[in-house]
Image (cartoon, rainbow, N blue to C red; front, top):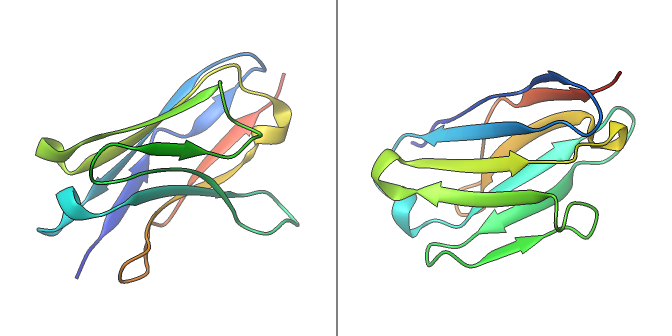
Amino acid sequence: QVQLTESGGGLVQPGGSLRLSCAASGRHFSVSTMHWYRQAPGKERELVAFVTSGGSTSYANSVKGRFTISRDNAKNTVYLQMNSLKPEDTAVYYCHIPVGGYWGQGTQVTVSS
């Protein structure tokens, strides 16, 4: 069984930055592709970014150039550095491992002045 625990969300002004963390339990973190999703009120959950076991990354067009996903296999943790935040980035952010279908509980990010 794998448990994912997100942290780092909060309230930030437009143009600000936050770094989200997702700590994973279990032995297979280093070989798993890790995803960040987000879900805004009244909208479907959408993929924000993912990082493969080899370190390759991919981003949604809406966050490209502003967000950076990274991983630390020694700490079983994946990060999402979010810069130049916009009000439309407001959502609950979730960590996800597709193989096995594991989700974290989510962390709220609110971008507002």
